[in-house]
Length: 363
Image (cartoon, rainbow, N blue to C red):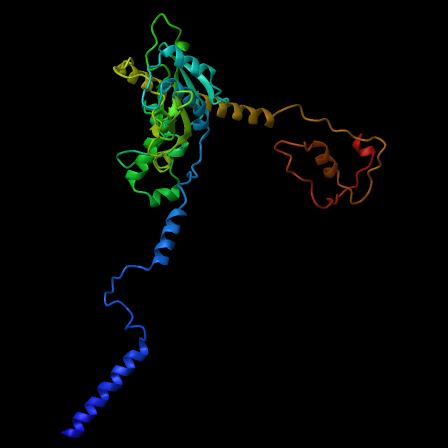
């Protein structure tokens, strides 16, 4: 028994010594595991928090449409906020009309259509043959939509074949809606019967540009001169929220300056939109048909163009060689530089005649 107790005591002593050898600093450690970090670590964490970079501007591609409307929005901002960041002013139609007329559009507008007493400025925003996803899950072209009086979808709203496999239908609908082509009233009212339609024009633009979804601005107070300072312009929502500071303001939907009751008769405007898209679709279809017919006519004319060239025979030539082939000279004379015989070549080797050709036999 005494030996057994002695052995247990020795084992305990060795185990205790081994534990201290593996963790020599354990006696100096605080018994609490959740001890506060040391001062140097807190200083290091504070330094890292100070070096956190400010949010940078996102790399968003600015469309030509967005670039053309940016100067106009800049003018409207200074008109609407001329009394300061929190004091939006009322702007009248003549002032806005002048802002549109003096804006540098950089050849953005491709033409204009006169329809039912209105002038609609057109822009190259969409492709007629682009495929659009309908609510019933079917696909149709912009041209087919417009023939029914529905608006086309702009190029940035079109999904590729690869995107169709990756995106959900709801995501495709959202993208198409954002870039559908809409009609904007520049002066926010219908033209009067006694007014020139040019005084209240309408413009084609995507929904993103129309509602200002890609054209948010960050404004700051101009304490020296009054009014506002434009810190950033032409921002998407995520950019504006990341860059806007506490004492600044995000401005959007800048093209809709008129507040209160609308001066646009919506029912009449809906009829105008349907008639407009049907008219544009018919014009495109007629021009395409005429172009195809013109190409067919030109091809037929080229095929039979001009009289056949005359055969010229050199009277002084002596053609009595055994292996001479008159076919070679014949094709050389007839083959035009372009046309349906342009790719035709004479025989690669001379044709041996059964009978020699002489000068006298050609007379």
